[in-house]
Length: 116
Length: 113
Image (cartoon, rainbow over all chains, first blue to last red; front, top):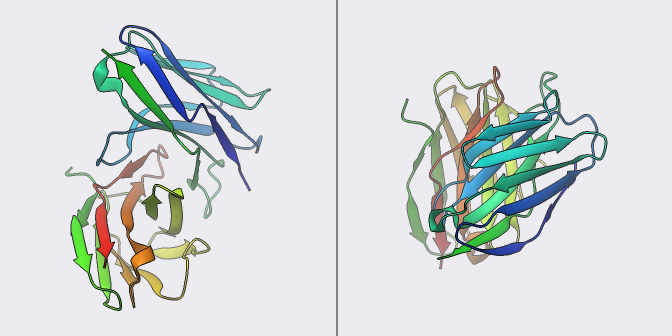
């Protein structure tokens, strides 16, 4: 099955600096890579995703890049703010192919702390 | 749409009692997932359904756990009998087949004393 590795497990940055979280996956058939943000005591919330036919996607201060050859994808947060402090999870899933699709394999999470 | 709805939000029970967690997925979503989250084990997939049919329950830890989805708008996760090690946050999530985006409910924080 799919295996997703996420690094680092913790990350501290100064407010205004950039943060980068990296994930690798094992199954070259995976084609959908979402990122979730989970604040303390809250649900994981989808913040951005990328599909395998795209190399990069941006949404304001966050961006995700995908390298299919190397089987890794990264989350980039620029101009970090204290409210960006949370646990971030990457995930990967198999292609849409009937029953058995959409099952996400999650990384272990990265705890991001933005220091004011 | 109100999003994925779960109830109760918090549950405190004593060891040996039956616990039932409830989930209402987003209308029109074809897939429903049950997860458990703890500090030690992270986010674990327990079981998921497609069109109300259980597809993969390999993540269900023991026979004490069971899940049902009697119709497209309701699912339950039952633990009987409950044990202290079942204490965790249980999330339900649903996915629409068109885009594949998975949305989580607010979770049920279960404490078994």
